[in-house]
Length: 434
Image 1 (spheres, helix red, strand yellow):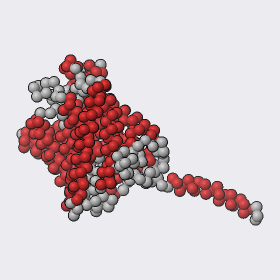
Image 2: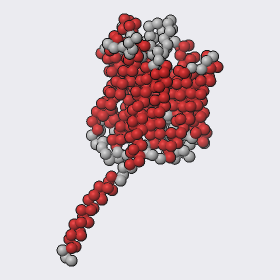
Image 3: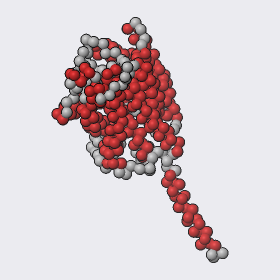
Image 4: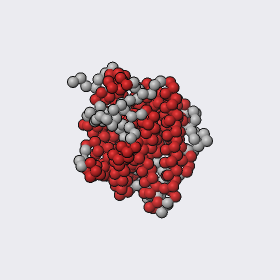
């Protein structure tokens, strides 16, 4: 019996070791982690989808270059985010403005959850999910400057913009200690961080580069609309990860965000089609594709805070407002935002951020706030502060970055490069051999 007792104690001690490990691992929820990893892959797919969406809208001689701009964003930011981007955006707060460099090279970012951001998934999973947002944001800007910006200049711009514009904005809005987050502004999946920042930055870049040669004097029609529709479909598909994945858990909030995302996209596509039909006389495939993207943009900041009926309203307004920005405002002002980044993302993101202040409800998300129509008019003012801050910061910082890049390498293609097409002159390739 005396010999048996030590054996029992030893056995219990051995069993306690894996038991402790299981207790530690139990913090990570397998379902939540699976959903976030799938959502990460969905958001990653959005950037190639964006490449097709944009690539079909340009002229044939610039198709490959346009595709390359999105793919190179995927390549560069995947490395930049790991090395320093994630630390600046989500690292421990410095003055409510930036995250600093304590997580440089993902130091301290591992398999254990970070309860400040997501308590049931590995910190690495959260980092990877946020990386895909950083990637597509710089890719979105490319639509404003296609067919005329030199490839080396775009490479430099991508690295600098993601470091000095995206990372601070992400920290302000989502980072623990960020001043816009502390203010109480709601942005579930990136209305300010992703869409307003890219739309406003795209406008500044388009104005600084100037209009494409022949703009307004010769037709610049899309060369492959089926490619654009395929891209729009991939964006719509990936957006479920974008918005519903931002719940960071496989739960009822993710389901709600999923439903309102689809609802707003469909409502905006319908709205854009009807308004274009009335204004232009014909509904177009390009219009329907653009409308669905406008709805996806507008619902993004609100997706975790509103129910289905407000999503219909947000989508209907987004389709109409973004169409008017593209078809009426742009021609009157004369700027050449080639693929309507500002009209869809800048305007759509602004409406979505403000609409969040109108329709947000704590009945949908208790961690959020009520909006104007649910008894809290102050929320609309808070949203407006976030919108104005994003507009001003993105515009000024983009202007400075482009000026700096212009000192290092020419921003714009030469006359002969632009006339011959950027595919053959900058890449030595052609999209099609006819």
